[in-house]
Length: 301
Ligand SMILES: Nc1ncnc2c1ncn2[C@@H]1O[C@H](COP(=O)(O)OP(=O)(O)OP(=O)(O)O)[C@@H](O)[C@H]1O
Image 1 (spheres, rainbow, N blue to C red):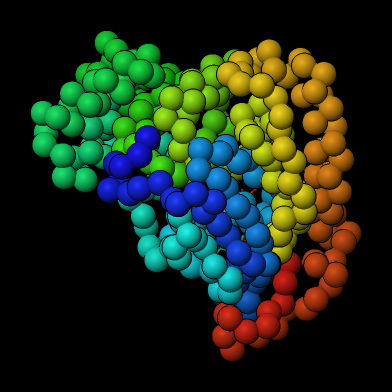
Image 2: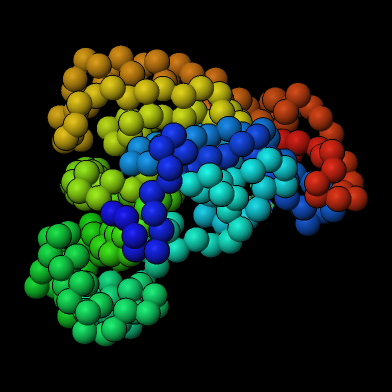
């Protein structure tokens, strides 16, 4: 999966994605500054599948926004193939919890839309879309409208829609969280099969630690907000994987226990904060924002 965005793989040793001491502060409606991420370091190699887990509100989606160019870091750097991210990059594909479809267009037209926007001729884009629908097991459904498909089928459309653009980097933000467990496992296997064929670097955000371990080469645990990396775990489970079966392996259970031990404290602290029984980030008070890049109150809106 190279070249679709006119890109080339990074030189040897250069990561596909790098966040270097990335800090992100947001202005709040009340005139304060909220630090969502602080000094976050993340490195994802070309072809690597990285899952990011952390308690609610710790900055997982913000991390994706920095890599994708939707937001700029307040301090530190976001790099793709060693170069600073300056905006939305055609080499980066996205998949979110809610699908980005044109509801009035057929499945085929929805999948062909990406290549069309990137300048491909109609006939070629349609042929390519048919091919991707076949790869995700949706041949015969080309003429359906999105609402005429099941949730699992819509996710497969979303996969085809994203992967048809041959991204070198894939950002996935809880893409399967709305699916029932069985459908979710089927689509996870499909994702793994497609990823094995094309090998983009992936950052996959999820709340589901089992999903993270089953899919990824490494799992990054973020702290409660302001999010930063607490620890990184290599997932040394063999590939190809079938997610239903891999969960039963003793090594999977071992990894789950280790990572959960690391994550649990953060989840509990996030819960205590939301219940008002723990202060935000050591009780640092909010300060009025003169500048979103200046020192800021942290961990509280
Ligand atoms: N544009 C913004 N303006 C102000 N605050 C923001 C903005 N975007 C995110 N935040 C805050 O930054 C923090 C991190 O948000 P983010 O969505 O990245 O967390 P998350 O880990 O993805 O959350 P969840 O697990 O609940 O999906 C949250 O407290 C959120 O309210």
